[in-house]
Every structure is written in structure tokens, then in C-alpha cells.
Image (cartoon, rainbow, N blue to C red; front, side, top):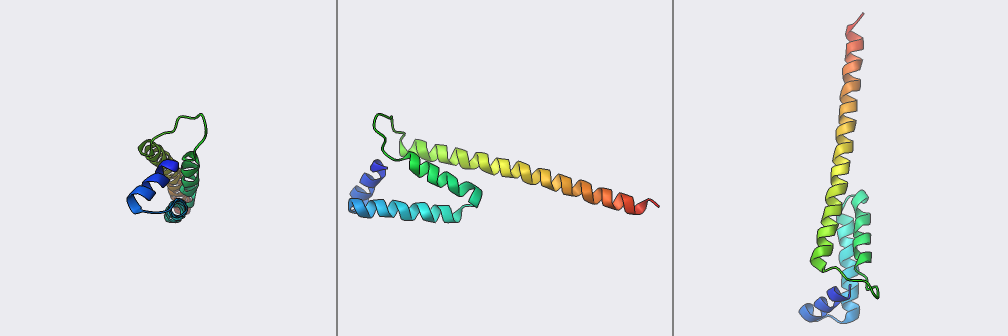
Length: 103
């Protein structure tokens, strides 16, 4: 997170407090644009950006890539669920009309 704060200070001329607040605003904005089942990933991604002593930090690009991989995985899970629900609905409708045709 400190790396991003430093970049905002250097590139946008923000104070450390303004940079930190900007990150919070961006985080909330991104969460608001995502479906609820993915929004939690934003919190996780930003939490992983925090400075933890003794841990090797991932670059922002690596973190963004990990975040997008996580979003992609969740989207694929929901796609699979939706396809399953659609198949079940189709089967129920087909069975319903088969029962109506047979006397």
C-alpha cells in the first residue's frame, strides 16, 4: 500500500493523508461497481497491499493480476451455477409439458 501512496504523492502531488484517502475512495468506488459476490475480493486485495514486516511484497502488477484471476474464477463459478440452474429449469418445464400431453 505504501508503494501506491508514494506513487500518488509523486505523480499527483498529494500529501500522504490525501493519497491514503484517495485509495479508500477508489476501493469503495470499485466495490460499488462489482457484483456483491466479487466485491469482497476488493477488500482482500487491498488488505494484502498493506505493509507487513518481514514479508516479501508483491508488485502492484502482480497483485492486480492475482485480483483479476480471483474475479475470473468467481465469475466462472457463477457461470457454472447459472448454467446448472438453467438446465434444471429446462428439465422441469419439459417434464411439466410431457405430463400435460399424456392422458
